[in-house]
Image (tube, rainbow, N blue to C red; front, top):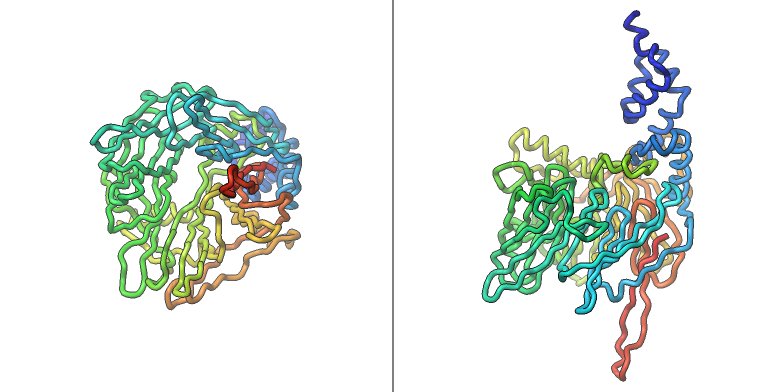
Length: 516
């Protein structure tokens, strides 16, 4: 048997099974191997499915449940619904007026309610007609008061933080690792509870919890003593603490923390110079034994005459297990190869006017420069060396309360005072496909030219040119406060006013979430 025919002598079904494991770029290379392989791929739907998945920022799911042809049809229907913003069903509505805490991750909504008589977490799995996901609701009882929580549906993981009150001693916390299905200790956690001791005695705390595979990070922030803010990272399965990163006053941290692959990123304002304030993203290698100061990527920095009342990072916390896509029997899912990071500037100029900008950054860009800089033993990179070609800076005021507006490479925003919302999409291959094929979609603006922002970030204009597209949709509800984004739905937040009892005439807002 000659070498050239060995592969072609395999059963066609077996060849297809092998090819199904390859991504789009690998399949393209296979078409160049020989005429036989090229013909085999062109005669199948594998290459078309892989191309459309890549353009949509998706990854393939279960081939055991759905054939290639069925997955391709489902993907086309899914993308067509998003392109034309068609609502597939009546909205699911949930009041959050009496909810103490809420979280929206991986298509699962968590609503925590507490009272002396009853403490529980209500969970809602949003449905998807186009991906075959059924609507589901369940409730788990809790026997402790939760300070904050997060979850990873792909790992059946619920992480809950409780504060331990000790008389005349610094505040301590207990971190619980529970099953999202049952509320019992998670079977993979060797230590279902971990004690965390801090240096602060404050009563008011804020938390940011991020989960990534078998790692998780919590930022503990006392509201009245920023010097004692700490970021602690564990392997939640083994209970091993990976790293503790204290934040001193010279960093003046202004943002959320989140663990990203092998790094942790943070935006901060530091190192005041004569005419500006240095804004930067700091990436920290959680596997580096040296805590260090991390690797810094400089950001556009406002002048000192601007009051910076917020500089924050927003990213999603999706289901992170790559095996979950096939194990959950979905036909396709959002790719984990890249994610969108949104950095919000909330400024006040000398005329006491609000100045709001959002900087869109792909995670892949941050990781590339982090690894490249570390290999050269550098500590930082100037904005002009990495930012203009790889980001997009736009005047946008995202909600600072309803913050789950990022998913994959997209972000959603409600245009206050209007009946419209916008979807910002920076899926690289999808934008390129539309432009090269000349298939510009209706109600879509394509960002092909550079954006120039002047007189906001110092004397020099700030340029940015990452390609993207913006879709505008009409809001199907009244009294909308914000819009959030998950893999299969838009979640609109509505407000309703009512008059208080007695004669005080207090007005309160009842918020509801509507999944469409």
